[in-house]
Length: 192
Length: 156
Image 1: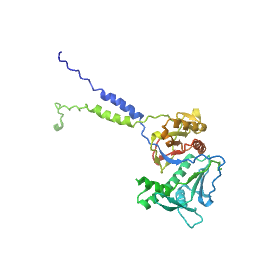
Image 2: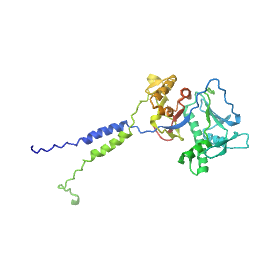
Image 3: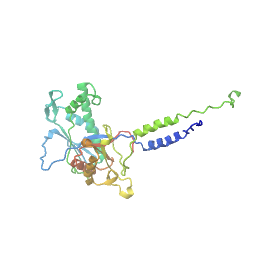
Image 4: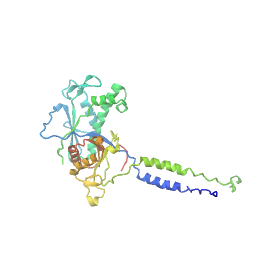
């Protein structure tokens, strides 16, 4: 056999091919993460189920009409004051008849009973309410409850709720600060 | 002035490009790994509202999307808000079937972890959204997410 050198493959165009592929993937890539406000819907209502009676003082009614105006507990409300109203409503006022009742609840993780507010936030909107306004209200409610969780967490563990690593602690805070937002069955609240 | 005279004998050495393909391949693999193909093309405009208290949706494969908004092609479909499921317009009645279909596509163990993300245009009226929510309740797809973007961030 005579010596024959294996011809070298010209790799000069390799970069071009790789570039082509690269540009294809660059164009098709979407790296956006979906973000939003996570909520849980109530389970479907069974027929002939009785309405649960809730005392008037335990409910903070928030109505949004079709002109995106707010009615908070019978008064004209504003989006900027909503958060503080909710926080004030959910805070414990043991001897004040104006505020919700309080009830003891046994927390397994802490092994003791804790007093919790019986308050419920009732959110009602018209069919004509704009979605943007609805999210604004939901956002303010979320902000109120997040701040309350932060305060509780700072008080108990010295760090903010988001910075809690221990899952047990997160659970405790979630039990201490429940998010009782009730969305009423849809109906027209007028203003069309 | 002759100090800056060009030295014609000195040639600029060519840059060695033999490692260029490697660099490009590295970039290529990065994008290949991070790519998720767009499964559906939007037929409705969904400019989601701004919010501050937003959370990230953890598992993308566990999310099914419902889009509500005014159609992009106004001439053909008008400017009233419509629902888009998968790749086509749908009515409120189709939601139950859609939820069942999404459940079928997942493993049995994951079926109750599905989050339904509502991508709703901010100018949409709540009527249609409420209808959709009622249908989702009936289909017991209770975990929902109101899609929103961080305040001040522009998108879509």
